Length: 387
Image (cartoon, rainbow, N blue to C red; front, side):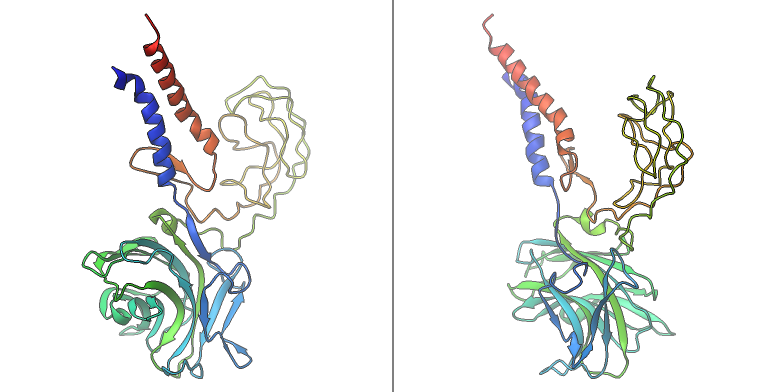
């Protein structure tokens, strides 16, 4: 009997605890939006004399407004190993034995490879023992192959694909780190899983760093370029597989304002949501301040753009308390939506509790749980009352 009385209370507390544990987040980003390399833990040969081998530019980006362009030339020598390389480095946050890591980055190759170049790999610090590698090399019959292998410099080949040039691609990895047989790696290429639980072992107990750019075992004549952007480390698979945002990083320029229009009458309500006071006439693409009229008069403004308008985008009238606005008056189009967040907005854990991320509407989602808690307390009090 006591268990039945307490069940709503226990359920509410359990869901709150489970939600707290299930919440995922992005732990680090390396997207060059700072305009420098302060997001990174290190770099290799980004400058030779007065020439920059890595430049941050805005002409071609995977997300936001900036990306890095690397150009590897034969006079770039990494001593004492006589290698040719230009790279940036991120020290992994969860790469010890027994830990799991989630990592992703984007790259674009503008022309075919003439020789092999490594473009990204996990390696131990400070012992520099390579664990797995992504690399490009010429394909038989022409073109370029993208390959991934585990072990030293990817000696055990796990996956190969023909690389499409002048297109941004995204690699994502989930690693279970171990020096034993339980170590593994999952790989996604442009959102499609291409490697599943491939065995991989750490070569010592050290932390690992991920290095990306261009790396060759010896200086060679062909000049090779690569663009990199959108690197991130997270603590959940959903984050590294979430689509990147608008590559311009800018909201729409804003729709043309409506022609003014007559303010809607004070509402009689309607399907679109609760009617408020009379809506003001639409101004220069701005939002009207008083709710959405239902049948009681549409607000003048712009047509609502697809998706939620982002920063800098104009919206039409604000939606009412229920439903969404699809068309408001005879105004112009709203601007395109802004960059969505890197992380997905929610994740469902095994308890069935939907968890919002990054501070999204947590108070709203807590009401059902609070109701369960109150119901449990009332039942417990009623059961304890003298009869």
